[in-house]
Length: 156
Image (tube, rainbow, N blue to C red; front, side):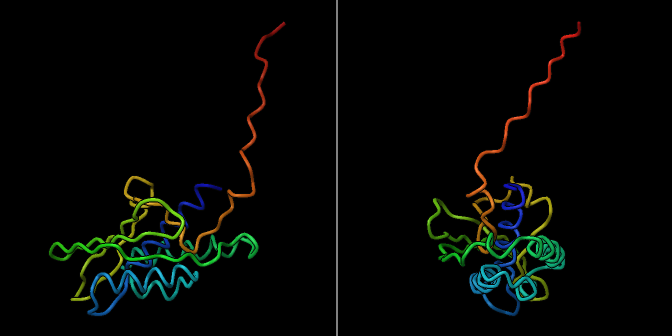
């Protein structure tokens, strides 16, 4: 369940940083994050690359399987930084109630900034922060996972 939560969180972050148009990376990221926060995956796709759109489609499918009672309330966030290097940019943001900042990668395609997410970047190494915006909070009430039962391997 934690993996699903982290996956959904990452997708949200990626979607939020993929705003289209000639806008700045910061404004694209903000629009992407707002869409992800409200679980508007179709809206978020407008701000992402083609690969990001595929991941958002996958996230949308996962989100449909989660009961409404398990879905998190919208999380407040604040854009804390923007770094542009040629056709690549990183926008950082902070989520209310979370420590640290989370980075979002963007690329400029045909003059428009798009959030760039991939399956590889969602694996955790590049994920950065918590990626919980708009994601479910399945772990909070489930408690710890049960320990596997011990198997007696001694033969008579």
